[in-house]
Length: 313
Image (tube, one colour):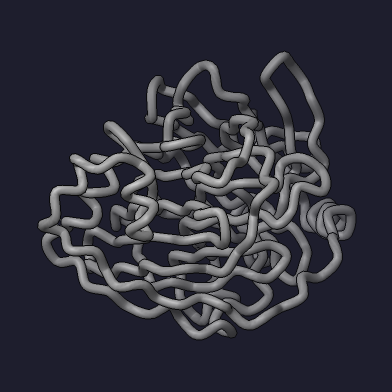
């Protein structure tokens, strides 16, 4: 389905999609020592991994995390200054409607999710993807931002805070500190915080988890070797969902038009306790992004932990 939007209808859409501006708060992030990649973590139980400030994963989700940790050129960096991303927010699901047994529509989210019981041990979403190229929708001169991420919370009304991490891409770069693509994390309702600059074609891996006290994040760019590992300070003890999402992000509280990204794929996309739910499975709930009455982005579960996406410019 083609999404047709004139400049006049785009202005009306932006006005209708407006949400209260996000309050910016300074980051409470602090780095943790990068784990020794030579250690045999494969033999540890989830509780033992958690005690080492690592995501308590098992099986292939743990294997994917360890491959990222052991990336040959990996080196730890600090997140970007908190004011680098100007007014960018990755919001909870907006204007959600239930359209089928496990199917939903949203104004800003597309992807898949599971409901979950959040205990003292972690709900852990993870994913790996190769960053796609984007272009403005129908030549739209306004900034459009694609947010690809995994997270916990934010789908059901009042299910805050939303804790997520992934990548942001802008059609103009003006709100990303002049950069076209930036890895990020966010603890909504605070704004997104940049981790490091990325580029189309880079392969990134991201995992976030909640250790019972606060959130943690691990992100790596396989191409440039940048790694951020640390505590975000995000407290999400009551998150009701875990999700893998392609989102039309917001600028100053206004949801942007979803840019054209063509197609893309998340691999190693898992969530839930110990990463046991696969986002590419037919058992996952699906969310289609619909703007101005037309489908803009759809998830394509490909089985297991592989989740595809398609945009409709």
